[in-house]
Length: 94
Image 1 (cartoon, rainbow, N blue to C red):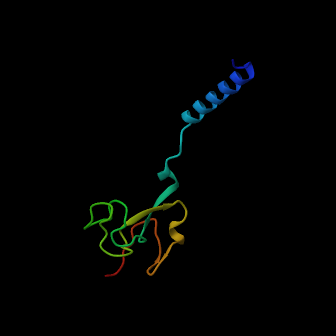
Image 2: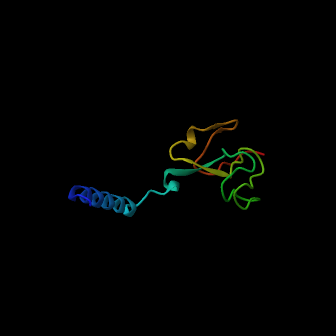
Image 3: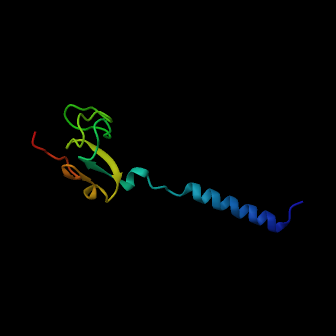
């Protein structure tokens, strides 16, 4: 036999669990941003511009029109041999 206190604790636990499951969760991508010019060759995330179709198709390290998803607010602090990352595609002289 269970005591009324045990039943109350169990009921409260179930209500808490259901409440947590029904709360909207922030998407992992919401806390990230596209950072151009920081991906190594073949390690970009999707759509790296002309000559590439999707993830892993960048042709050179730090390709200016390829991007990686990085934690929001960190892109422009990332340093590469060509300078910092950018929130917009980078045009580099050839």
